[in-house]
Amino acid sequence: MHTDTERCLRAVQSKDARFDGWFYTAVLTTRIYCRPSCPVVPPKPENMRFYPSAAAAQQAGFRACKRCRPDASPGSPQWDERADLVARAMRLIADGIVDREGVPGLAARLGYSTRQIERQLLAELGAGPLALARAQRAQTARLLVETTALPMAEVAFAAGFASIRTFNETVREVFALSPTELRRRARPGPRAAVPGTLALRLPFRQPLNPDNLFGHLAATAVPGVEEWRDGAYRRTLSLPYGHGIVALAPRPDHIDCRLALTDLRDLAGAIARCRRLLDLDADPEAVDGLLREDPQLAPLVAKAPGRRVPRTVDAAEFALRAVLGQQISTAAARTHAGRLVRAHGERIDDPGGGLDHLFPSAAALAELDPESLAMPRTRRATLTGVIAALASGALRLGVGSDRDEARARLAALPGVGPWTVECIAMRGLGDPDAFTPTDLGLRRAAAGLGLPHTPAALVRHSAVWRPWRAYAVQYLWATDDHPINHLPTN
Image 1 (tube, one colour):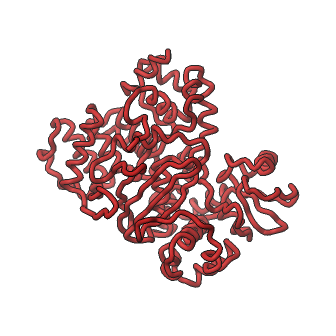
Image 2 (cartoon, helix red, strand yellow; image 1 turned 90 degrees about the vertical axis):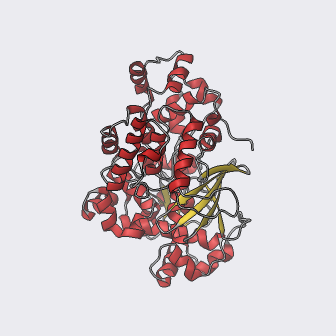
Image 3 (cartoon, one colour; image 1 turned 60 degrees about the vertical axis):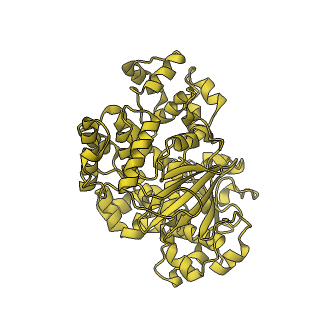
């Protein structure tokens, strides 16, 4: 979008928050860059330059605005919508791959050379993977400086900087303040009641309907791994350097996030996973605008706009849970998953609640005895087949996965049918166009609205909902009075 000067100018002059994260406005006279909704008086058009990423603006010598904090705006919805190399790379960078494994590690995950990745990122975003990762480190450092009392040396290494000197130089360059000045100027914000917990605000584009989002997560919560407590969805997180526990609660203009981590180096990755889980980078104006064009869906969208797709923090975990839940009720699926967790999950402590396990990895389940599973033999074989494929690397499910390839590999596994494949694509891989035409709830909702309700006819009609069919599914499911569609009240 940053190349459409007229459209960018209109967004800046109207202070349109819908475009925050789509592009960044740099001001030649002040050498700062802002989000489109910055509350200050817009500069003259001839003094504006537009960039596709915060990293590109920083590389061009601009520093972040202290008023609108452009580095903290929602991410671009393109990285969830698109499935190409750049989008996959951006999802992996947000997950911290470059900080942990370097650019060669990013390239290995994507199956391309480092030169190809750098060339494509530079062409589209104006910055290479190192610059994009650096911008993310700066944002992580800012969060730690402003929301904790950690010594600056600990902040530097937790944010992913190799040295305190690099940390100091980057913070000064990006924010035009030293780390100490940044902490002194920090706005009063949320404070965590539990020592060692970080209190953060996760932004999103309005509107956001929390009912089906948190309702689904609470209704399908695996005992010991997830729970709804005191108005918040809480769950455990398996992270590269350790583990964590997060509590997420909906607020009118943000998501209240309380994070407890065993290693602060996992902060950026944990935030990225929470944002993916709640689909916070979605563009509801684009989604709802298209779905409203269908006369049958229009009343549903008008009644409760801004529905998100409840996703996951770990695609491999969700794949196992999807197989466990095939052809059984939500309650039965929770029971089976809970048994698996208690038998094979790592135990942890949760001083603030009832979470006591991490969901077991495929590697931890590789030696699982199928006879220990209280389920039909065919589903046992399917589950162990998926575990073996994940543990061996034959099946790769993650933020950087090729969605089409993952679908094909899933479909080739015995016992994994189209419904399971599409559910994993929707919630595990984050495909906004995933669609489950054989789902009984979806077909029942379609029939009630006068839509075609046989799988083949529903697929044909769903062409008008593309590329947002996963969101159409949420609106259709919401017509049923099921716990997944209601925000928990206790």
